[in-house]
Each structure stands twice: as structure tokens, then as C-alpha cells.
Amino acid sequence: TEELLRKSEKLAVVGELAAGVAHEIRNPLTSIKGFLQFLKPHTDDKKYFDLMLSEIDRIESIINEFLLLAKPHTVKFTENDLSVLLTDIMTLMEPQMSLRNIQIELDIEPELPSIYCERNQLKQVFINIIKNAMEAMPEGGHIRIQCRRYGNEKIMLRFIDEGCGIPKERLSKLGEPFYTMKEKGTGLGLMVCYKIIENHKGKIEIESEEGKGTTVNILLPIQRS
Ligand code: ADP
Ligand code: MG
Image (cartoon, rainbow, N blue to C red; front, side, top):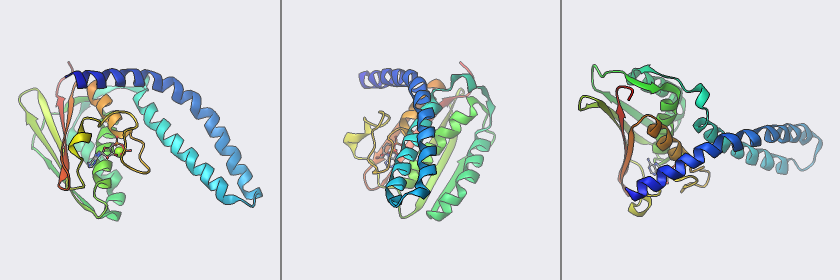
């Protein structure tokens, strides 16, 4: 519990800072990017420009993940059907998935009640989790997404992959900002997930076994609380 508390305090602070800082950085960055693109055709050292542009892209993707956390005015909770949200995401990710030889199986209990949520935020959570599962299976593989009622008031979602897994000693670090094992990772995907699920009064729990796979469990309340 102390661990959990520490994590959620950290998240609250990060969330508040994120909005301000991200906005302040984004505008000057956009103008730098514009000037680089403008200058590139006039130089003999194009590779340095490409390098600078790709570094800026990286900064932009980090900022975008932060801004997702920090847009309280666009947050709108409504009734949503999880199977519709998940099917939308599958359509969105279909091209990447077939390219990477990933099969996703949707296993949704019939007549699942709709849940009260911020649909774009929840979609972002699902996308971040599915992306991690894909990245854990560079040779391709299966992802199973299960949705079940959990008692009368909750729904349990499970994202089950058969990827590389996560060593035990690293499990407690997940969700901390900038914690990544990937060369090109931001270490923000799961932090965003924790924050959003926390906003929904839900819970995330990650189980994993090295070499076997990872399961991300999300418990969400059906009604607004
Ligand atoms: P990023 O994907 O940018 O590294 P995340 O916050 O999404 O950042 O994930 C943090 C780390 O957690 C990843 O670098 C990876 O090591 C580990 N991880 C998350 N999901 C999985 C998964 N499904 N399988 C294996 N490792 C995972
Ligand atoms: Mg990720």
C-alpha cells in the first residue's frame, strides 16, 4: 500500500505539471521544426537535419502523451459500450497488427452493461496496453482481450499476451514516469494508463512471467461514483 500511495502521489504531481510545461514547450518546438524543414534543402549535411528532426519527433511524442493526461476541459464522461470501443481500436490498429503478424481475439461476455467513462481516455489506455503487448512479441503472436462482469458493480478487462514477460523485480516499477526497457520507449504509456484508470476509480494490476507472457487486468466500475 505504501508503494501504491507513493506511486499515486507522484502521478498527481506529474499530472499537474504536465499541462503547463507541455504547452510551453510545444510552441517553440513547432517553430524550430519548421525552420529545420525550411533549411534542410539548402544544406549539404542533410543527415544532421534528419537527426534533429527525428529527435524533435521524439520530444513531440513525449509531450503528446503528457497532454493526454492534462486536458481536463475536454474530458466528458458518457455511457459507453466496451465492445464498441474495443472494436474501434481493432479497426484502428488492424494494419499494424497484420504487418507484425499479431492476432487479437476479442472475448466479450454477451450483454455486458455499458460503463460510464471518458471514451477517448479509455481508448488511449487500451491502445497503450495493446502496443506494449505487440512490442513484447517481435515475432508476432496472440493477444486475448477478455471482458467479464465482476460482481454487480464492476467489469474486469484482461489483456493477455504471450510475449517476453517482465522480470519480477521490475513489476513494481511499472507506471513510474520514464521507466522503459525499450531503446525507443518513452516510459509514459503505462503511467498514462494508471492515471486514467485512477480517474475512473478503477484499478490496474499487471501479472507477468518472464518468457511466458503478461496479463494486464483492469477493474472498472460500471456506474459513476
Ligand atoms: P514504453 O512502452 O515506452 O517502454 P510503457 O510505460 O508503456 O513505456 O511500458 C514500460 C515498460 O514496461 C516497457 O518498457 C516494458 O519493459 C514493460 N512492459 C509493459 N507492458 C509489457 C508487456 N505486455 N510485455 C512485456 N513488457 C511490458
Ligand atoms: Mg508503451
